[in-house]
Amino acid sequence: MSKLKLANGAAAIIAAGLALTACSSSDTPSTDSGSGSSAPAPAPTSESSTSAAASDGVTTAADVFGPACSQLPQGDAPGGLTSMGPEPVATAASTNPLLTKLVAAIGAVDGLGDTLNTSPALTVFAPADAAFDALGEAKFQELAAAPDQLQPILTYHVLGQRYDAEGLEDAGTVQSLNTAGGDIKIEGSGENMTVNGAKVLCGNIPTKNATVFVIDTVLTPGA
Image 1 (spheres, rainbow, N blue to C red):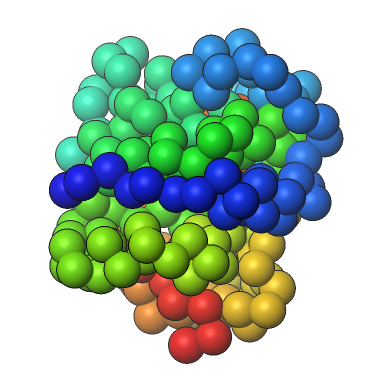
Image 2 (image 1 turned 180 degrees about the horizontal axis):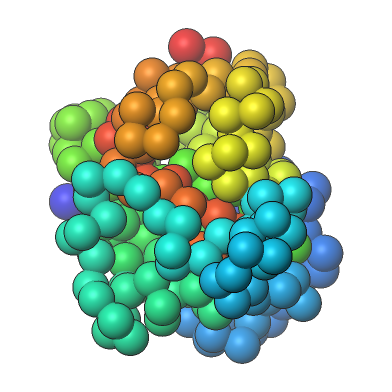
């Protein structure tokens, strides 16, 4: 797929929307694992830490679920759950083999990766590569030529509060940074969980400042 060419104005708009939940800005590149807020790293797996995690949306490698989780590298390999956990979300996503096209889109927007990395607590619904493929090349070219249409789509996939799967299920509906896009409806649970009808392929993925849910569809604001 060709890399998206976005105007600097669109980058500023997207970064401004995400900054609603950011604790500060950072000049550190998004590939620097040291960038990000002081949000706590995922707690060690234990009964007590699991209970604490349920209240703040923080997860561990033991909490992931979904059919695509087995496609992630194992152990400490880049893109594996152990290596992603201590990294801020944009940096972690850059190593995830399910998210190469999403990462390319983030990288095309100046400052967006750093803004994601420095936000203190996020939930990210991350479309898998196949979800972007389903849009078709023509649609991508249309969006690349109209960043004002792309901006609300990108921000609709990010929540300004951190949820784990249990928290999403309890909430039922959640609101993204694109407040004009309408509520996002959560249905089902576990491997049957859907996000506005999109199936969760791998959920509860831990990163330093966000919990990630890989989904099989690109969400459409206002749909």
